[in-house]
Image (cartoon, helix red, strand yellow):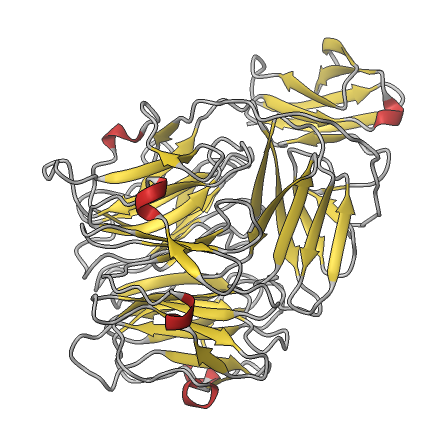
Length: 576
């Protein structure tokens, strides 16, 4: 059984971010993601970059055109293999594919949305065997032009509720729906009773988020067609919602394809990026007073293309959010951008960097999502493309000169996935904020880890997590360059497969491709380390004098090795 111990490091440092050249490489074929095109379905589909088998590695799930199955690509420690999860009955054209622990049992269930065959919920028995429980769960509806799904806990009862987005240009009887999770594997349609309109808004996707920082999950709808203004529903805290679209300024009238949530200017308020046709995208800056201002034209992200998916990503881990946007246009339509990677310059202004690797990003692209292929802490992206292109798998090869931390939440009183939680970190007094979501962008699902880049800083003051339950966890001076899990109410961080406690040496990533980060408690310094192979032969010895050290062992062949630390002990390392 994994054990948890409280740890406190009293380490403070003052450091600034290092400038790093962003570099991505498209490696779908190299990493095993062949046969992954969406096909020729209507307006593309969704994609998930989420660890569906809970082994610590982000997997990829790809939606499909009619007659083709959903495709599953399992991450085998840095490369992918397509696997069969026996969804032979799921041959409808799918839009949304999401992994969600709707029943709080610790495994991930599959939820899919179709624009021709409504939606289905498949329960995981814990061994990656699935059963369609949609009828029993109260989610069986007639063939229905549904498009997006988003999960959140609007009534703060610890169970994830479901919002369905519907896009139908001709049938006013088809509308968005909010389902309350009853906690007994059933759902109840509460759309009308909570104050959600049943008008047809041609909604591509919606998202649960907290726009006014009151600890309650609000709902934002991205509506296609300029005459269907986007809608923001404020959660009243009594199980009902109020339409505050006009008062907040969130009622933009565009052909909205997606809504992407993030705090781009690190002020603690969640902003919204909305993609559009060539009339230009919308970037709603949250003013912190219940209103939004569109800053797309002034901050450089207007784009003017046929944009679809968008994702916030700190590509170089320099502590600010960059932005990637997919486009339907190809290089044959050169008057429009075929995609856009916008680099945040640190002040909330964006520019498109040269030679970042996206020069060949010319496919007809729809959804995109963020994850971590190799668990190196530098976020990667996958992009769903129209036939004949397979997905793009953008591997982040930026120089790893900056530091980071990845955090996964496990709810106890709150929902198991910790959806709707605020994460705050402080680095040398400078704060960053993330908010956990399940379903955003253009019908996409990002990694279950929350990523924070911290630049060249070598310490984090604290991590603070505010759960939907109201419980607050604080971890002081956590180690850096690790992926950790925080259990609600514990104030303790489990690091990888190790235990983070006072006096612990941490080696990460492990397995590695050759570059190791070593975190050493102050009380053990100075120390030394020697590495041996499996036969006990000493390969090198090195003195360590810093709290954070980098060991380059890339010259050695694949296999098992041992790091022997003076006055501490042994760490087993696998090179793959």
